[in-house]
Picture 1 (tube, rainbow over the protein chains, first blue to last red):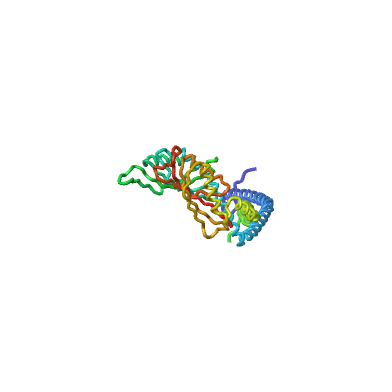
Picture 2 (cartoon, rainbow over the protein chains, first blue to last red):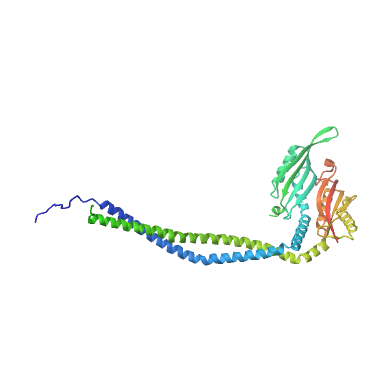
Length: 195
Length: 190
């Protein structure tokens, strides 16, 4: 039999291959996205149901603690309790001042103070936690001697934040000497010395 | 009117199917997937926040319970502290003077005139008494005197140390004659 190459349509067929491929790819992509979304949805649903109880318990615990705190706050904010707390703080302040380690400070100063520097006055402001701000006045033979002492003081971990308040040249009678008075504050942390 | 051929119709149907699946996918994402995912992460965040809140509340609760417990025994503690370490008002300076004399004698320092002043109004039942005490002696004796004050059963709080005489009276370990004014504080109770 012979081969016929005959087109009986009234107009030529359009090529739909590209459309079909693109639509097929889109379909495959959408199916993959659907599977991914469905699995994700199942996974997150399961995880959420697993931790929902945990969240509820945490909420209950936090609320219960909040209630206990409110009750204690109410108890502690009564005038007699407030007055008692102030008294305890006052007494704790006295104990902190009493336990201030004076002899240890002297032994530190003995080690650090050069012979050319002399202590003139020492006054601590002690906080409740035991740390203190020392107001110190010294007389030094020269500014260099003072600088040596200041550097030595700051090299010890228990002393920090040295701030010079005043520097005054000393005059004895009509003659000026090279002596200088230094007034400064330094923070003292006894607990750092214990470490 | 143009008639669609069979292939064209198939393509349109295919496209309609793809679009429908796409719309369903989008709706699924918006209605189910995204809210469930957000809920999970929201719950996780809320658990983390609640745990942090609980820990902080627990810490505050412990502190307040400690204060409440201190309040329960505060009267007893106060009485014990005050009677052991402070001086009764009716005894007052009569106890202070001999005690300071004893410390000075034991430490080997010279103690001259003592200035004392008592606050007129008590604070929490305690009268603050400020003492200005000039002492004189060798460095080691002065340090010994301060040790006596530190270890005394009665609270003598050192408020300040002022060395008198400047360089003539240097506060140095080698110094054998230092004059200084000690600022002290103690308390009388009623």
